[in-house]
Image (cartoon, rainbow, N blue to C red):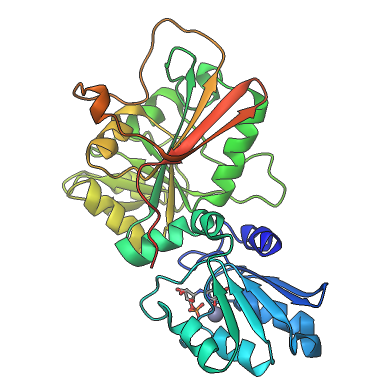
Length: 346
Ligand code: AOF
Ligand code: ZN
């Protein structure tokens, strides 16, 4: 399953509205087929793995990071393909929350006499599929707030203009997150202060997430580096956006943050990496719309500066504790990440 999860990871950021999925077929001790889902509309992971395995799939064990599908979508059901290939056993990391599947894939395999185990490597699979799971169950992207702070908890503004807070190692990790995210979000304050590019740099085979600027009054400068064809501008309903639209911006007129996220969901954006600033993040946090936090902490002191979140004071008992926190050194910095909401399961 670890190998199947590594296969699935190759599709991260490329499969929306579909999930990234990996499949490994094992005959005895030998891996006979590997596959991953590269993009929506293309074949599913199982199909690639079965194709490679050929006749050796007969009597083999298939490891799949998501329950094999049971429905005709853009492609035919993978459960049927596994049965037809003579696979004897299927190990599944996580059930598919898509209402068209939702346990039917596993049921179909069992009814055909295959032995099915569910839940192996589930935690990692859920993390990989958080965007898909959010989109299919909530109709909105999974929102990750990423920020970098000094040891005294001050954010350095995003972008290089103000000087980076964190090390090259931490910034390389951020570039990987950008590569894996469908969309990257910033508030208008960050655009005006830092003029970030919001591109993925230094990742082999990397691609850029779709920029989303939360800009209620459409104040984004026509020269902003994040403004390119396809950049999404989230504005208030009445904002004058003509000049920005001429530059290729796609405008979403939203009545509030929940509406904005649902509109992003309708554009098939399953994950939103929020990279600042504190005003936007605080509003999303207050509305309960941040799902995950990735904080990079640098061993430096600033003495003054902004906090990554602000709002009314609360007692420590009311603090929002991260579930499943993860702590990892990145060069001289430390990454602390965790969930504010559970990843939707079946
Ligand atoms: C699998 N293996 O690799 C993936 C699955 O329109 P389609 O045919 O691509 O179907 C999309 C749905 O299939 C998607 O919403 C999810 O439920 C499932 N994705 N299933 O067996 C895969 N990517
Ligand atoms: Zn399938």
